[in-house]
Length: 212
Image (cartoon, rainbow, N blue to C red; front, side):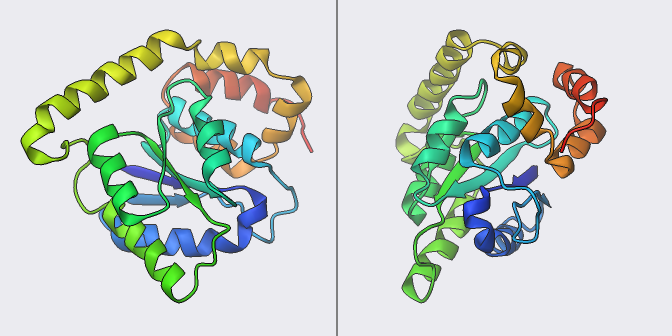
């Protein structure tokens, strides 16, 4: 599994914390750190980051996104607004585990504004550990796993049928918004190199212009 790390500029100081924890507990996966880091010249809001996360997933450049904002709630809602993204909110180890096993989504949002020191940091690390402790989508509790997995398949079908395509959404967004997210060149270049579908062509057309 290819796992992308990306969060808003407001929590840039937590980026290394998230990257280190995911690398520790998802050691057999490829981890790509897209920031935002403290030394990046451009600032990106949680809404902009949610679209970039959606692009990474829609292009199939990555399989899973670990993200967050101050509360974690705003990023979760923003990510879930992008077609094809099923983002969970994981403030605790049990929330992370149940999301991975029952909902089997492709993104998780963390409350990075919490004070991750002492007991807070232990909770954070345990949350990442539980998220990646078992293969996703096995169902929980185990004696109801088949029903849980069926419900998740139905939920994903409902979301898929109720949403427009990623390309249609992108074409409907304000041009100035698109221009700014295209400034996140590490994401843009990664999608161009590793993406697999029509989103790559959309990105390629945008990338021919000079931004920032």
